[in-house]
Length: 205
Image (cartoon, rainbow, N blue to C red; front, side):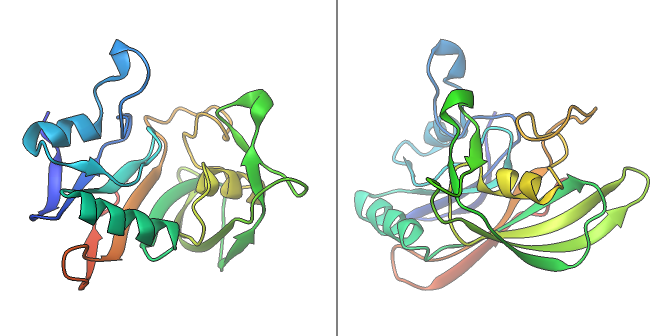
């Protein structure tokens, strides 16, 4: 299946990843289908820059040259990329705020992460509730990860008491067709000429 491309030029590719598809190949022959392989089938020079969890949908960018990849990698490492997500969480959440809880890998329960005040790395997430659906008992929440830890949004929301609907690791079992987390916007400086660019993908839920 050919990916949905939001942008393609000589240095940068931006595509949408559906929920349930790996971002990069996993271990074993049954885990080779992934967004990077599908993008590379169309553009063989595409180079991975960042990832999304398999159960998360939304925007991923790829570089088309080694120099563009280096510049984008540095921008992600130095928090020079703006990322916004949308999630649907279980419960009625109101207002806005910031979650500041250190996170670490939960080695006994991998691939999970956990809040760890002794050994965790500083982790911050800004959030804003944008609408409660009484019929489903869920709230739509806009999220901005200030840091980029593994499973950060998922663990932070669960720690707040509002796990993401359909999250297979951090939420109670629910009859949901997917995990309701979507990378809906990405803002960065173009790796070729440095101009600011923003790409958007409306949440599919």
